[in-house]
Image (cartoon, rainbow, N blue to C red; front, side):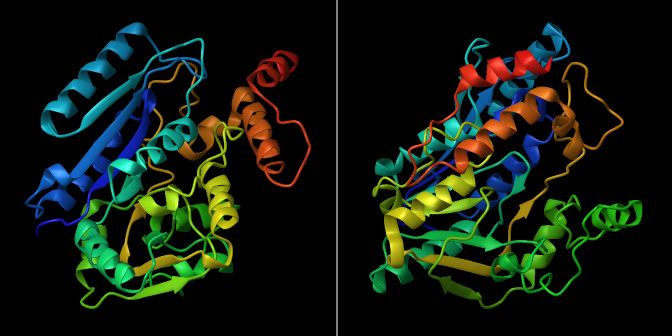
Length: 337
């Protein structure tokens, strides 16, 4: 397959995600297998080794992580590496994705990778077809999303893969529900393998693509046409961490209004392994009895920063309220210690 379009797929990786990220890289590699002109795809990795928020167990462990990155760079020789290692200044996934979006003049598609995401093998072939179709329809500014697993409320139904949309959602509020959530393949709390995703996608013969006129998406594996980004739609600088996808969603709504278009490729599944057991490792003073989903949520710094991030998210548009900043975070953290 020869690509007519150019792609940038970028992923921000914290040092503690080193054990999980190869699964993401392998999924991108498999998607590239049938591409003849691989130079049309820039696979960018931002390796964040900063200790601003959390520290690695030891200096030796951080050195080992650097060696792991070097090994991955040799295996996936085409990746473009970037590094961040300042300990006195924070840098988050929201910061990276904001910068990634600004590369829109170099490509036709910008794709948000994520360390716990598996991209479908069919990705490039499908997106080539989609660009051809959208151009014929005079639609140049759009979002594209692949099918997802069963989510927590009906508003997500439009994005759910048809094989999973009528399955039950398990909330993890009880031990029984937690067990079901972690063992049911359609559950977003189940850690799905590449093989399992491939088996689901192999069943698809004809694409089921719907177009919606309102924004609905999460950040993992998000596909954005560069023309949409050229409007200036982006993650606002006031969003420091949590809410990068929600704030970008609202920015798209603001810039596009009634002309917003999103293509939902329902029967090609992408996987977001939110509770992958390898997601958080090598962090000092981590409670290893907790699942990866709950480890960070128990920490004072995270609760404080999450409150600030969500507070800013609610003030983004049509407001004169002051945004909280990192000084406020440090001050609030000092009071809570």
